[in-house]
Length: 212
Image (tube, rainbow, N blue to C red; front, side):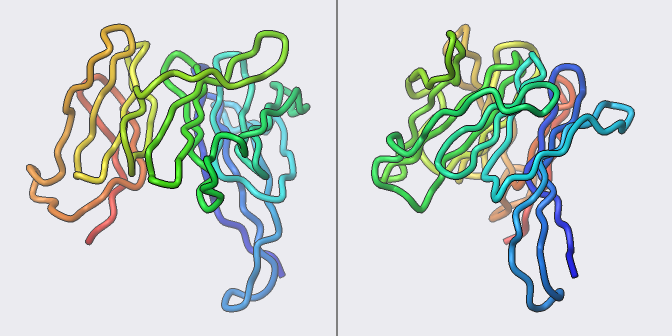
């Protein structure tokens, strides 16, 4: 008996959807993970590919139709048809903090980033670049400090991130400025936390949140 659960997901600039369908074997009360399928489908729902992976810790997409999957201590890169094009090891960037795989995310320009978490929960951002082979290039501390999750913003070179202080920030890479966008506490949501976030327009945020 198998059951399925939706894991991480993202979209690219052409509205193609990438998602991980987690597979569980066994009954509902006694089940264990059995890997899953990394899927890509078009805006109209047409399936493009399904690739089996033993596990997945994060997925992102660039503006060339490539998918980036964080799994098994590396970032696997898949082409638009599902063929693996390469991989980048991330184990050396984790600073002995093997409990955290780090975070993989993209921005609205289609750039893909990996955020490594050190043993002291400090975070360092790296951009995944392709200059003949895939590698990580340090981007400095634009990704903030600790306990943050990152999301693509609208309007080009912008990122959003939600922090443990119940605040959503916007970072503009060109101006190198961070501004407050939304405070959950100011909206009567003290103790709530962001689970997932999408910026639909310049002034509209779609947010899934958890209660205290």
